[in-house]
Amino acid sequence: MQRQPASPDGQFGEAIKFFRPQVACTVQKVWVRGSSEHSVNLELAPVVESGADWEHKITVQVSTTELPKFCSCLLRIIPQVEYKYHGTDRNKSYSLQWQSGGVLRLDLSAPKKRLFIAITGEEVFWLSDLVLDQLHRNTSNMSKTDLINLLNRSFKGAG
Image: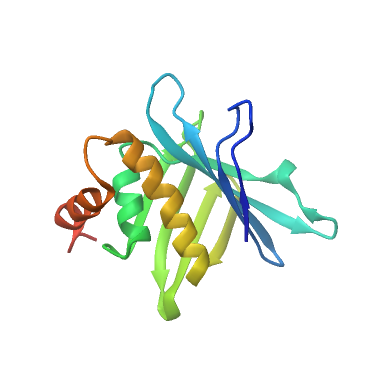
């Protein structure tokens, strides 16, 4: 796992990168285009001999309306989320699902392409911190503790 700080010029937000033998993952803080709201971009790229093939990555931006439920899944309030119709052509999707053994599976799909990564332990902690921070920026009138309590009340028992 690599943590990458935001760029000094503010063009790129803080990011976390995960690497596996078959796939690389970046989750990056972003501003939502045309608004003052915050979210995250999810990127998965296949790995080739020379490293991650970012030219063939799949990128999906979690919408601000999806962000609370996405965060609830990271915090294990709900076991999974799935969203479709992303991208300019509305042909991308993503899902996040808890698996046995405390493994969190992230899938990204685009036409004729699907990539996934298993995220574990410490990685889930730092990913949750990054995503919760973005959600908190959208709801800055409450503490992070209140935000987590609200997520629990809103989504506990929901699938």
